[in-house]
Image 1: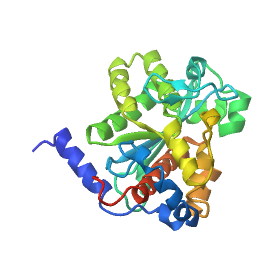
Image 2: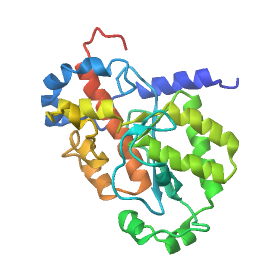
Image 3: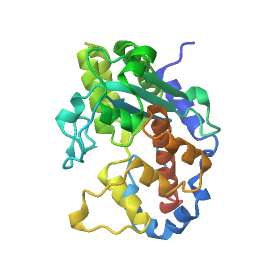
Length: 287
């Protein structure tokens, strides 16, 4: 019998809830000490997409581009409905590397869940500034990369399959990563995938969103005032609150600004946020 999206969704939910995740944020003493502070603001997480009641299988993704503009732009709401810290001009930079990590079950990490693809820079170069950040040169990408349509097709097929089965996309600044992919889909005239991408990205979770970041920082004793609404933390600093002594995280952080490593860190951060929310929400709350 052919499986339906509904049956796939159920199987994904069961897999996601089957076992505790290998990287347990309870292992870090700092996160335990934060429980009391976090409980006082738990109501904000009720109904939030990071709360523990959501059982979707997460798919982290990340990109690297051929250049970037320095500095964070004023906060706004982006095209996919998430908090955005970039300008439209930032989304015109070209895709150099795309990585994704799908956590099919909360068990041991499967290397097959990691995917990372280089893109042949057809008609554009990779700036020296960008190379210093992610280590990819124009020459290296030209030799080792795949065509842009091929990379997009592979990723979109994976992202759409996870979405249909009840999964959820997650990124640290989802609007930027999703916006660059959206622009590349448009350049390649992949309109069917672009329409589907609108659905996938708009239903995703951004761990850089203001509400999530404010409550996260409050839980760890980082006070905010009304004038500090734009204060958000980098992926490294955010995940460091939970996994300061985790050897696997240290290894991934050494590979920071490579797309697959950052994609896996996005999933780990979401698991940590959900663990924090679970301890903050009374056991009688509906899941």
